[in-house]
Length: 121
Image (cartoon, rainbow, N blue to C red):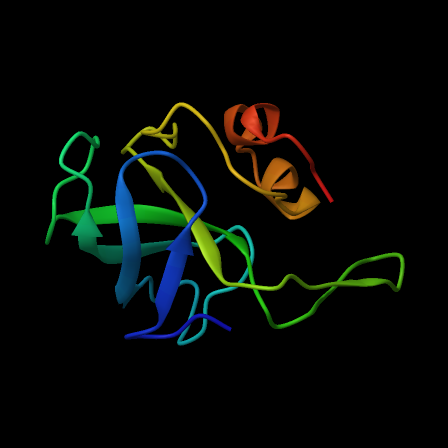
């Protein structure tokens, strides 16, 4: 359950420390989940990173603490809320994906992000 003003961790090496959600598409609703794209602002960034501090970026949600039900009846949840910074074409701006990501990301059509991840759960 990612909503406005939620602080989420970064799951790639684009250089941001934390991200704060400032916009969710009206097609998604008030709460974003796995595979949804949200608009965030960067809170703290490394000087050598791709993104800068206070920059508005699009973020794909790859991990949520709230469990998500699957078609086969199982549930998946993670230890943190995390996202990957993407560009307008849906490609990641970083070069590595850190930590596991959900299978729903690959099902949503983000194959490049799924292939960069070490583990797809």
